[in-house]
Image (cartoon, rainbow, N blue to C red; front, side):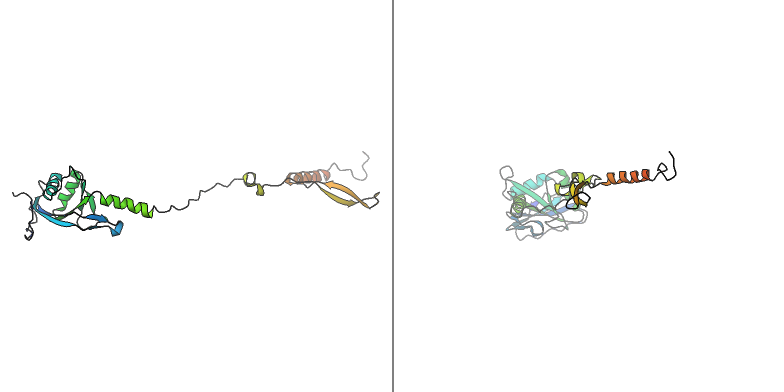
Length: 219
């Protein structure tokens, strides 16, 4: 069986059978990634084709061999190879080829797709573009979080100083009385709170009890 070969300029693309296990690889190289998200694209690239790739022997070693035929040395130059999965775009379809699991995914796709696209990233332009986008545009502002607070029965006790209850103060009250030249006398009265009010009701009940002295009692 013939080994994969670089297609010469002007040569026609080969024809494959549905179950022969052969496919072609289209390589975009000497370009760079530009933009992020939906605007991501690969610009100023050259195209090379390698035909008669066999799914039975396909591996990362063949990709290294293709790059060497194109004049690249991965031992001395930083190169990342991405596979654009069939039916997808650069936004959601780029897969960084780093392990045998990625190669197996490529082989599985050759049963329906006879042309696979590889893109060579020179100097991590894809990752640097993502970093530049973060530095220029920043990260989205996080929404403000409102922390729920449990209502307390003693809310007034722990509220702000303005809301705290002010102790009752004595205030003078002038009453009319006898023996005063002005006809008035000063008397200080204390405002009763809820507890004192309850005590006063208890006193009234006691005053109206059966122990009151009525007219006619000798004792």
